Amino acid sequence: MSARLAPARLAPRDLLRVGAAGLRARPARVVLSALGVALGIATMVAVVGISASSRAQLVRQLDALGTNLLTVEPGQTLFGGNARLPTESVAMTRRIGPVRSASATGSTDATVRRSPLIDPADTGGIAVQAATPDLLGTLRGTVRGGAWLNAATGRYPAVVLGSAAARRLGVDRARERVWIGGRWFTVVGVLDALPLAPEIDRSALVGWTAAERYLDFDGHPTKIYERSADASVEAVRAVLARTANPESPGEVNVSRPSDALAAKAAATGAFTSLLLGLGAVALLVGGVGVANTMVVSVLERRREIGLRRSLGATRGQVRAQFVAESLLLSALGGGTGAVLGAAVTAAFAAYRGWPPTVPAWAFGGAVAATLLIGTAAGLYPAARAARLPPTAALAAS
Image (cartoon, rainbow, N blue to C red):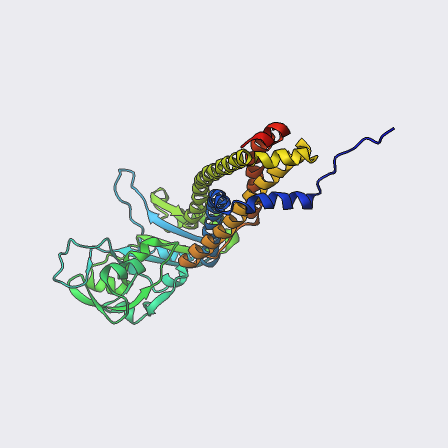
């Protein structure tokens, strides 16, 4: 009896070589097809990376600025008017046991201008506020140029500008002068941005005593900033309103500025989901391009398919060949896209001063998406190639 012949199996290494040979024969088409996948993967990796870098920056800011800062502001009276905090509310806040520091600002009716020739109504959105000497320490702020108010400068016409206020006034260094309340004030310092107190960025800050002497400030604080031990934040928050204004605690608003940064991080995650959806659409378009390339490849290589079938290749081997080509094509685009997405993330993070962060799962997702797209795009062309009869394929012109 004659032995039954069995078709030789195609080793994985040989399968990859056969698939790569098909791609090398049409380099221009391969590059264009891989570009679609690359753009989709790059978009998804960059979106995830930029979002992760933004969240890492927010976490770094929270670590540096702390989450133990509480603010106290006057609310509304029972009859809908504007309430006021007592002049001694800062001192009373400092008496709370776990409180480490407490400082305040107070609003004035003065305006700040570059010169007296500018229209008084043109305030530029800058508020002139009185500030206690320990305000910068409580906020953990830094001075970009010059110095903060001290016991001496806080009694005379000296002013420290927030970062946005300095930019709007065109002041970038100390020793310049600005017009406040009908007299010249000397700029003694310019602050860096304060993420937990953006209202300070838009303010011109003068000493508490100087504001009372030169700007008719009434001495009532309009915002108190308080820091306590981390473990005692909620306990302090519970008694802060009654302490700051014992007669009318219901007219006091207590808030935690770090909650805004946490909410911003959550909003960034929600926005990331939307952009990921757009990246998925781009990746889907790239997958359609790969499928189209593989279909055209099957039509152009019918004689090759017929010859291989005539020499003993099985339908499964032909099918595996074209699936391997599709996977290699997608892998080429996916690898390029992952590198491109990481490069975009690093460049954008460096531009914004963020720590560049690309989660490992983003690369894992890129690999999985590439394999999925490659398999899906190659199944139909591969099945079509496997169904071609050898005689009909060889007869094709």
